[in-house]
Length: 292
Ligand SMILES: [Zn+2]
Image (cartoon, rainbow, N blue to C red; front, side, top):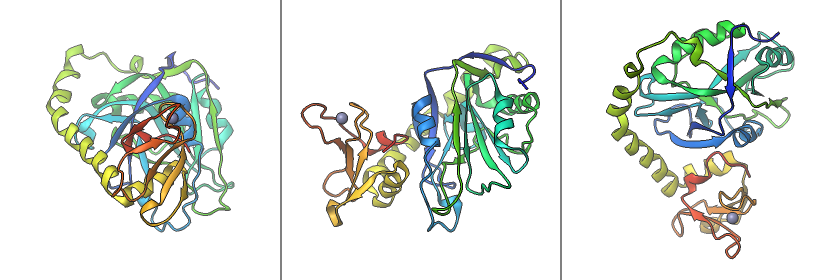
């Protein structure tokens, strides 16, 4: 059944999202990702069978942060992410989102008898962080999905897909159209100047520090680099100081030829192995959100 009063608009080419090494981390790394790239990451299920606490797994937020990773630090939210834990089957939930673009992936606790999955709907227009609670409630009401009502905070982060064991069941699916859900028409009009300038201006400076600290960690910490390699699904070759993550999609030429050393003593940057035809080199943080 199509969603009642929901409106749509053209699907934007890119979305502002943030990645985190784990659930507790306070240092987001901001990325602007195309829909296909995001769907690519949400369709990959690395096996994390040595993980005892799922909160230690990498996660993401469909938002950009203007400052601290608190609700008030959210600059805008660019995708609607909804968790369904056992209350509905996959196919009807996807149908409920028609005609809007949507991706779905099963989550850590998924079992065929009790489907646990996440819907990800790109938004035609980002919603300012301070209006997110209203937008979220209006969207959930209109979609008529059994969603936990307390999951509406703008700074909410979500585990990237992962499996607790090699034999765990999983599923991912995307229904991509030119149409994206638009939540702005659901919001009562507010004076245009009331929610834009002040909150973003006051938090901009700290945000750059946070971003720099997150990028610096990927430049110098072997553990952070190993987690990134894991998350990208990179192949690991070599040992000791020459142990390296390989086969990552190159940001410049698009071939699976980017690599970096896990121990950053000799070289902190990532590179493309096609030195002559491409020659890309850049901070390891540039590879976040890409695929192997
Ligand atoms: Zn390249």
